[in-house]
Amino acid sequence: MKIGIFGGSFNPPHKRHIEIALELIEKKYIDKVIYVPTGKNYEYKNNLIPDKNRYEMLQLICNKYSKLEVSNYELKEKVVYTYQTLAHFKELYPKDEIYFICGTDNLSYIEKWKQAEEILNNYKILVIKRKGDDIDNIMKKLVVWKKNIIITDIKMKELSSTYIREQLVNRKSIAHLLDPDISSYIEKKHLYQNEI
Image (cartoon, one colour):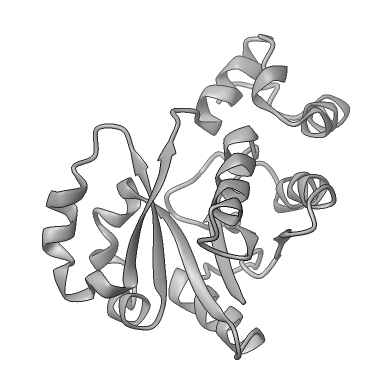
């Protein structure tokens, strides 16, 4: 089986997060997707709502689709790095292939990540193109690992969790951008009501 690991803050998870996972499965790049929300101590995100809420929202999505799962592996008191997460799933699924789902924005500096070579040597990277990113230029730096980097034909439509949070703070309707269960959950728990 080909298993795609989809990391991110999912703050909140929106429709595009679901569409990307389902498209990757439908186009047979992978057989299932595991969402791995990043923990609250991730240094590049300082506005995360509690781990529990982001995890529960992803559970609501995964309950609807048999090939989508969520893992709490990175929801720890200490920072968990991508290479550790991938190694964890490789240990969990030794007979399966582990893929890492990555946007061109992240791919552009992947060689600066902790244990980058370990990731690039041992796992397949499924790349989602973002508008305006020069994939040929990015790949020039990563040519050594090109056999492990798969540029998908799935494009990253511009929709960000930041935009959704801003709309929520300003009491604007974003129902069309979220799964209905996520919208209800956010409302019920009074999330994202303060300033960003």
